Image 1: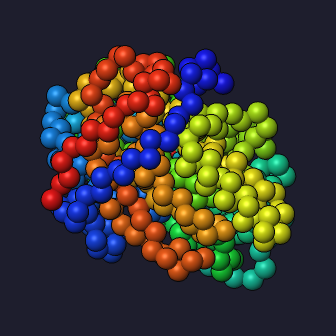
Image 2: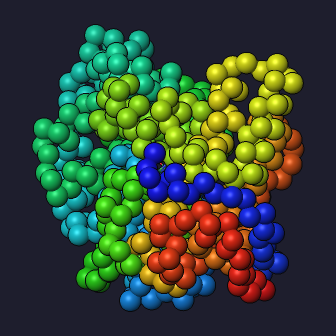
Length: 478
Ligand SMILES: C[S@@+](CC[C@H](N)C(=O)[O-])C[C@H]1O[C@@H](n2cnc3c(N)ncnc32)[C@H](O)[C@@H]1O
């Protein structure tokens, strides 16, 4: 707990934050809001989280904020890099932070357009040839389902600790063997110029073609397949990259960088007063575990090798699921005096006791809610020195009501916390809705639009300032 955190117990301002009426940025059509438009596939499709926000949402806010090549956009929770890639494609400088090494890797490769596409294709074909030859010597054809009994004798496998980290049956033994053979070929003929692209192509092929993973939207395992083409699937991902890289050859694009870092410690990575806009989707308290979503490819590509490494990774994340809460976590102190968050946590706990629920997850959920909002408060406080006065921010977050049916209005609460930290809440746009399975209610995914008007008096904020700060609303978009 930092000294500043102790100075900053957030009081609930109880403001009715402005929600924009239906307008150009309100996305009433969930179909479009959820989809990657076909013209938006380039670079974005190299690897992306299911249900990440689409590039057209980023474009809308780049335009709404009036950004151009003189500006810099920050995404402090950049995930697979949608904001960064889209900003760069639109000629705007971009900086990202991401604490999950696999997602950080994906973002950084998606921004690396210096690779020669012809050479990437040729080198990959050589490696593919070697891997296919190797498999064929073992009596295994990559592109034809294996007939007869799997030759257990020759099959490569993960060591027991690594195997214990992946979801059971997330990859069948023969596709796993083929993947490990391909990885051997890649490592044995490693060429630094293409290695990272080749590995990201494999990550994407693994998730969508080789494994038994299924996204609904949570990651799970369905219909394990006994075999799958691996080298061919990888080459098809490589060809996708090659054709995208050809599109940008000969054109200069602005600087983009992505740091493997915690969004609650931005100051060490981003220059003071250098950011003109933030477009981001942080986690929200919905029990989603981003380390689980990326687990198979994280383990196979060596980003997570042991339980200890996995625990360390989780410690660097905003607390958004109960499996990632640790003894000694203290972000909740940032919202110790935020009445609404305290009330929600109490309601959750009372409902749990009423229903006699006693599992570890159920007992942790009230605490998780406080840790989540405390972590976001810490992030918003920490980010202030990096923002230029007048910086505009868009935070995409979802309401939550599935567990014990206590409604958590994430966007409203985040706006309220931001306001207590000296940000102006400009409006809250509706992005899309999704059906909560427990309550059959439509939950809102919203974009909380903020402005940082400067004000060094508010850094570090004293409690008195936050409590008395008046609310100043911008005009709602129509
Ligand atoms: C909703 S996802 C972002 C998706 C992103 N918009 C995209 O295009 O893929 C939230 C991301 O925040 C990351 N994250 C969680 N806690 C973090 C922290 N403290 N610092 C940086 N990143 C964090 C997660 O690993 C996850 O990738």
